[in-house]
Amino acid sequence: MKQSSGSLTEDRLPESPKVKRIDVVCAADDAYVMPLAVTLKSACRHLAAGVQIRLFLLTGEITEENWSLLEQTLDGEPIEIHPIKPDLDTVSDLSISHHISHTAYYRLLTAELVPSDVTKAIYLDCDLFIKEDITSLWDLPIDQHYCLATADAACPFIDAKKGCANYRLANPYMATRRPIPNYRQLGLDGAAEYFNSGVMVLNVERWRDENVAERLLKILRDNRSYVWCWDQYALNVLCHGQWGRFEPRWNQGAHVFEYPSPDHAPIDRQQWIEMKTNPAIVHFTTEFKPWQAGSNHPRSEVFFEGLADTAWQDWRPPKPNPSFQHWFNRRMVNMIKRTTITSRKFTSVWA
Image 1 (cartoon, rainbow, N blue to C red):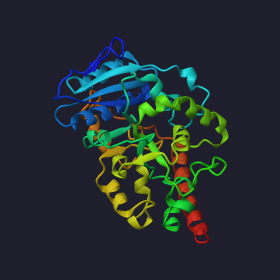
Image 2: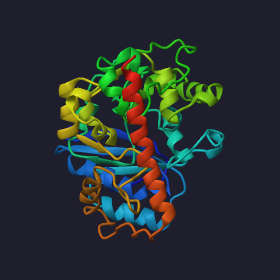
Image 3: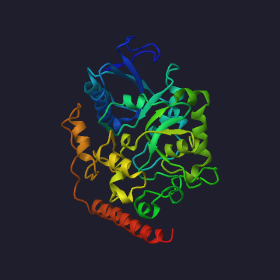
Image 4: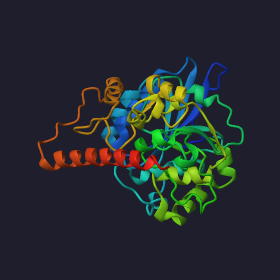
């Protein structure tokens, strides 16, 4: 690993016909450095020979100790890291909740922060385990799309009742029916797909030319009372009808395990099966992360498989102290989930 210590535009990977450089953007703060290490190490380990990553890391506060552990993890890997610390005030007024900090909004500023020679970039969340060569994403034609992405398994349509072919079967298990509640006022097509922002290929050149960062922030502020799922709201509003697709297996969210069978899948049956059984990228979505004490995340074993290849290899989450509050909270979450599923099954009959 090489970490840039000077100007971002001064440091370059060696110019050679045998080296293929791909530009990657991540955003992380101290709470996510360890899963970031899993993301980057797994990405490096699956690169084809001759491929190198130039990473632009949009950072919140990160301690020297965690920087050192990240460097140890990536030492010798085909990656150079260029840290960029955005101005927090740019996004500090935007809403956050659960496991999300303001760092999640930094991806929206990508085109304003990376060097001018970056025209395209793969954006990766810092809670992934990458099982295949991300060069496959890099090589996809982006044309004039704002980005390439894939439908969010938890809520794959702007309005599932309009877009989901098997709505009655799938609806009880979705995270929400309408992830953009005011889509009609915004003039969006309810039947259109809604994408997850954790894995994207960004058309940085178009973002830069069309001042996309400012427009995304304006969308969030103008629609503050309707925003659900943070940055994804703005991205899906602005990119509506102008984003391209890659296969869902390149972004396996935890919600894929909520659907009891392929018959209940809200997307193409075969693509759903591939995403569930043969993912190219495992995305540790939901607020219950594998590294949290007492987590029951469905892909926890994959996270610890990746962790074993980092400088945090011996780390394990502390066992939670016995607590009535912890027990009660978990019971309430499960009860709400069961009640929601039952209620939606009942109402879907008249959908």
